[in-house]
Amino acid sequence: MKIAAIQMCSGLDPDQNLAALEPLLEEAAGQGADYVLTPEVTMIFPENRDQLRSVAAPFVDHPQLAKVGELARRLGLFIQIGSLPIPLEDGRFANRSVLFGPGGEQRARYDKIHLFDADIAGLNAYRESATYRGGERAVTAELGEFRLGFSICYDMRFPRLYNTLANAGATLMAVPAAFTVPTGQAHWHVLLRARAIETGSYVIAAAQGGVHANGRSTYGHSLIVDPWGKVIAELDHDRPGVLVAEIDPQAVVEARQRIPALANARDFASPALQD
Image 1: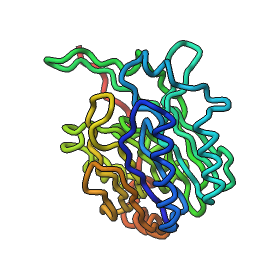
Image 2 (image 1 turned 90 degrees about the horizontal axis):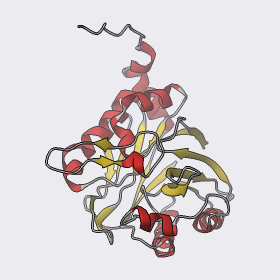
Image 3 (image 1 turned 90 degrees about the vertical axis):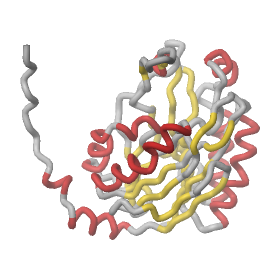
Image 4 (image 1 turned 30 degrees about the vertical axis):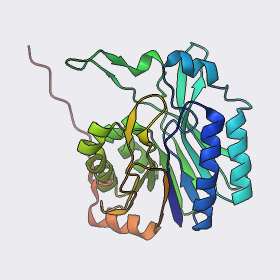
C-alpha cells in the first residue's frame, strides 16, 4: 500500500486553502498513493478566536468537506483531512479529523483529545481549552490491509493513546500536526519515532510548514516512520509538498514479534501518595 503525507502552509481563507490542497492531492494520486493525510488545521489556520468564529462552518453540509468527498471519489483515494475546526453548541470548537473513502463517503471522524493548557515562564498562559473542547473517544478505521489509528498534534506526547489504539488493532498511526519551530527542532522526530517503536506501528505525520498569514511559523518536516522506528521518508524542509512511501503490513507483524511490548504489558498498582 502506498501512503502520502501532504505538507501545507494554510492561511485564513478556507476556500483558498482548499484550492491549494487540490493539486497536492492530485500529485499524490499521480504517484500511486492509496491513502493521503493532510495536516492539522488544513482548512483554516486562524489568527484569533473571533476570526475562527467568522469562517468555521457547521459539520453538517460543510462546504469544503463536501468538496473533499468529491475529490476522494474522483481520485479514488482514501483522504484524511488532518483537522479542521467545527463549531459546537457550547461556543467552542472541535478540532476534528475526517476520513473519506475512495467512494467519497465519510468513513470515520475523530476529535482531538489532548489540549495544550500551560503557564509558561515569561509568557502569557495558553489555554487551548478556552477555544476547543477535547474529544473523549479514541478512534480507529479500516484502511485496506491496515487499521488506521487517529491522533492530532499534541496527542503525540501521550503514549497511552497510541498504546490503546495499537491494542485496538491499529497498525498505522496518523499524526497531522502544526508544530512550532522550536518544539519541532527539539521533539518532532524523537516523539514520532518513539510512538512507532513502542507500538510496532507505522506512523505518518503530515505537517504545516512555513510562515502563515496569522503570523505563526511552523516546522514542516512531514515524516513516515516504519514499525522499527526508521524514518523511511521525509520532506526535509518547511515548504508545501507531497511525501509518498510504500508500507507493508508484514513489517508490523515482524516488529511486534521481535519486541512483543504490547503482549508483555502488565497492569500494576500506582504508588501511594506520601504525606
